[in-house]
Image (cartoon, rainbow, N blue to C red; front, side):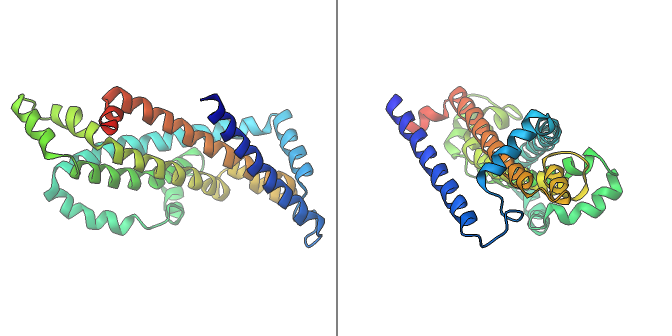
Length: 259
């Protein structure tokens, strides 16, 4: 077990080292000025600067608060509505065309209306995160409910389990693997559009940090912000995976998969 962990760590170290090496080589070739493509050492110094003066943590806290409010709201709305629509196929047949028309529209396209409705502040960014995360969760939940094995429902009916207990005790756990896929897709989408939303209409957050660095002609801080965003997105994804594994163990999904 320890050897496997060490191998994974070694692979990560090698991959990052190769990437940094290619980056440094590109700088040394001199195709771009260092003001446009700063060397790794300068970017790492900028990262240290953001950490030491507290700028990173200030913007990170704001972004994370917006993200969790928007993302959790999307989970609650998407799962509850998805369970209802997946269970009521006739209603879903009317709603699905509307969802399929709205789903491809970029959340940023709604930004002018969102600003008019909610004003300037945290609300527009939260609304964009909600829109970005809502549709993947809704569609995966509807799909998960539709793929629930009919045997589970018959057994539950034989034991006298009725609505709404059947929906939350039988259907939700059975549909959870597909819902989890939607959560992963929604996480990535919501994180991307959080940063985009903060770049367009916010005065704080990680997206604003990058725009502010660009306006100050600090390309090292721009790249530092990009790196922080990527690392934090990865950590959030791992957190969701841990929560997913915990829920699967609690509901016995892992055991059923193993069988």
